[in-house]
Length: 253
Length: 95
Image (cartoon, rainbow over all chains, first blue to last red; front, side, top):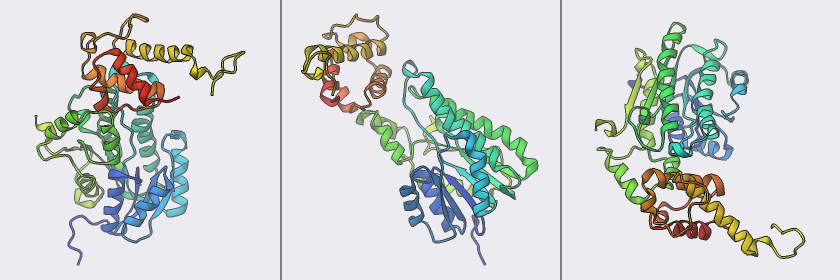
């Protein structure tokens, strides 16, 4: 008898942004919990590396750039022809920028909103179609604690993440009748490749100050992946429209 | 490599080119501090211009946008004058 509270046996999950960080860790965890995964991203070599780190199963790679917003519906339809219906979507693709307002231009704002918000809307829109997903399914989006706690220098990024929280709530109301649950997660800083790139913009002293502002320290990708698989599984079947903060205590202040 | 019209001396080796690059750096710094164009000479103290975490981040982000290089924050934080920032950029960025 399987006594796991979180079980994804027989479930097929699409994980975007699966070539690194939290996306990669989510794909690994879904496979350990019995699910099959379509790992998606732009970098084929890194996606293959993700697959090699997963438990064996009927997983597949789908290379797609989510910036091609108008192509997303066709991509999902094509995926459906290849692998059948989906039970879950974890959208981990995203872009970050540390730029104070005085150097924010419309190009940057469009870049951030395109990938972080517009592609998410298109992705959920495509996923919800009856031909694409199974009767009962779950969507997990990634917001950020930056949407809830003000920090200088990241206002445009924060705005995109605030949009994800708002989107989650309204979509949850709209999609509940279709048996689709949608929740989002607001993590604080997690030690990923993205974090390493962010660090190039800060001094050691600034980084130490950021670390100190997390009573439980900075997160690991698996800390967030644990929450994602919970939301994908039926263990969270009474949850929709929630925004779950996971931040090592950062927002306690 | 860029050549000046009518000359076989690479433009990079001329003082005109160096001056142009210096001017581009000065323009970036003037924009970061929201100063009038052409008002900086180079010997100004950054602190007197309003050097803080926002202008610090803005400078690094602007250099990244204009020159495609990310300056090391630990190096930037050591700069005290406008000329220090320009020297750092010149030593980091080779066109």
